[in-house]
Length: 142
Image (cartoon, rainbow, N blue to C red; front, side, top):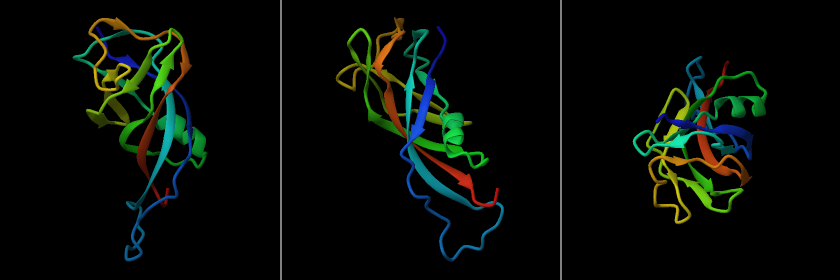
């Protein structure tokens, strides 16, 4: 089985940028940190506990900001569970890693702690997408 990858739907609710400190001399390497919500769905594939699930929110965030800056994802956490069209609640567990803007996490059942069973097909249709809170930074002078 392969890793199931989400489709990112929308990025919204951006925080006020934080950083750099007032004592900093602005250079090309300075970044500001922000956060936002990203909605997503996993609509195809078979879940494998050994592989977890992934999503890459960078494009959805950059398209929403429309400032031409490239972001770097730092972390993510579940903001709101989703619901499949068949009825069960689906959530994202504790993030196990972020690499090259790709967030890896387990999919969890209605209690939001029990991981999806191995070899379970992900819902093909959703009534409400999962919502994740994503923290990222972007260059100030880019």
